[in-house]
Image (tube, rainbow, N blue to C red; front, side, top):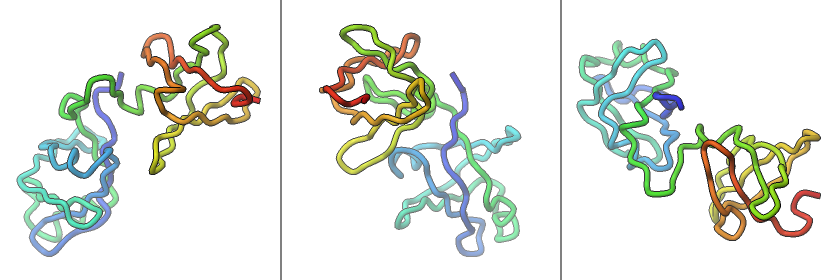
Length: 165
């Protein structure tokens, strides 16, 4: 499992005192507000001295980033966080840990394919599954279909008739 996860992207500066606008890729901006240390791809650590939700982005002030000139250098940078800094609810998983897992019938062991992506929708997430023939199938992530997730063995589902035809 990856120790560092993509958390989002700095999309712009904010004002003249070193703040940046951060587009979070976390499940919510509230999760991103709780992160106190971010990392650049090269491993450089960016400590948060202040952050606040503003509309659909997070405004962040990093230690040592005190001017517009300092902040503009961070524009378009992807920020990472340590997975240990993100609290996970019981039974929850990071998306990056699920992508690529086998999708298996919980009742008869039939292998349907691998999880290619997780699509976010208002009602619930949807698993995008790449079948062995490279076509795609979609399974709503609800307890009626998703029976068990085992990070070693795969995702066990109970599909309805026609779901994979």
